[in-house]
Length: 152
Image (cartoon, rainbow, N blue to C red):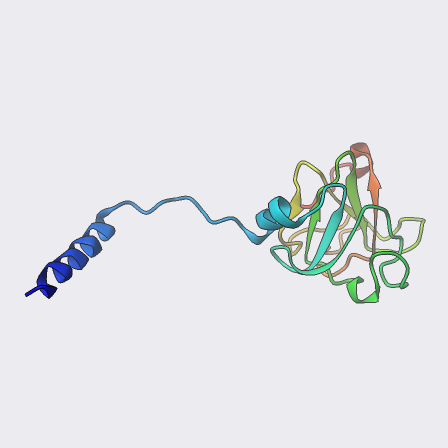
């Protein structure tokens, strides 16, 4: 007989749970977590997968060729980024499809205000080429250098 109150309590709680409204709040995304918990101010980050997972590297400077083995980005990072994060304090990050200090091949920017792009699948460089798995270099620029070509 002692089990009956326990069973009734469990049934009552189960019934109550089905009648309460479901919260519309969402759990933090991995990019939110990276932004709020892991990313250091003054740095930009690139990730191999969407949602800021699969860390490729971070940099507070510029790198004109992610595949040349010089700087914070190495060959394994070139043409691999599927999500990016900008925790810069004064500048925007301009990512390029090309390499070299001529900064060619089309670009896409990520602003400090936007913070991150959790997927580059729908983003295009200024040249029209998809930005997903195509970033080869980056530099820090003022907002006006980006025109209207922003990652979303």
